Length: 300
Image 1 (tube, rainbow, N blue to C red):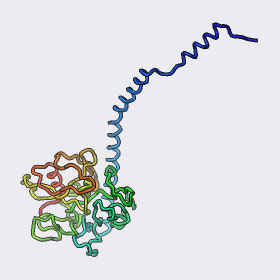
Image 2 (cartoon, rainbow, N blue to C red):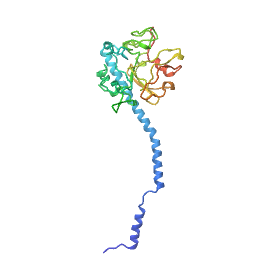
Image 3 (cartoon, rainbow, N blue to C red):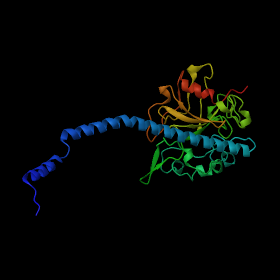
Image 4 (cartoon, helix red, strand yellow):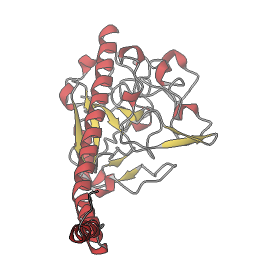
């Protein structure tokens, strides 16, 4: 019978002793290396996520703008309204608003969380591939709790008030007297052929709005003070800044872009699940001047 020698048994036993685990110091070194690598990679991953969301946001803007353009072409160059008029019962005119409903954080308000309430009834719905996701910036995380269930709000974009107006009129954003169809001082564009100044490529159509500023379907650029009284300028509404101090916009010619805001006053602290005071003077704010330049012009 074959037997191991004493030396062989000792060698075998010694080999088993050599197969021991990591020491505590070695484990701590490995953990430290992993933490360092994670710290280096995390900003890269966040940046990649922000970039991806920006691309998705721009795609949504372009698709909605194309739908708006197709609707206009099919309807004798007549533009949809940026908002309904104040009288909700006037469906003879309100039906031509690009979207109805008001957004807030009331769970009983289905406009907040049910695409069937307003979006599928929009005149743009048949033209946008019946896709509800393009109505919302993916970086907008606002939601409403309905019967214990958290539901995302269904749209984040609003239309330039001066493109279509309040059922064709300047409404509460007029510097003139009363409410005037087509505008009393600043032009409300009613047909795309009206948009010769500043022109389709320099007239913004849709904009991502802050979750605590969006309500009706319009974003109302306050034109007071433009172009030569910057001390008088300010906001009626506040733009979104979901893309690292920047927001998504589309223009009447069909292109979309991410605009980085320059002035901290454009981005006051967020009011979670509520509405921020968004009507205020903001003298010499470069963001307001940028928006005014791309909104409308005085009626000659």
